[in-house]
Length: 96
Image (cartoon, rainbow, N blue to C red; front, side):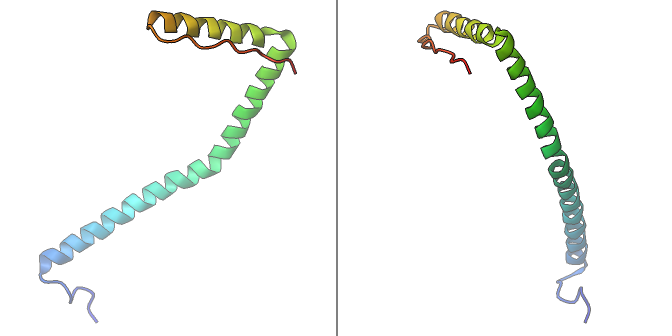
């Protein structure tokens, strides 16, 4: 059996070959990126998570977290006032 026997003419054979090659290249490239991302992603995420936890723990210990939250709240209120929007309500920061 000839693989090209079901085609109308030579143009169909060339078009089919081009589509097959283009799809194979695209599929291979996309899969390579996804495989690398799946391999590297969790490691990178864990490292970021650990670093964030360390920074937050340090800020809680030295009391600067409350200052940062208060400053961010004041900036949000000022921005809302400038944009004529309702200001955010004040939240309290509970100690651990």
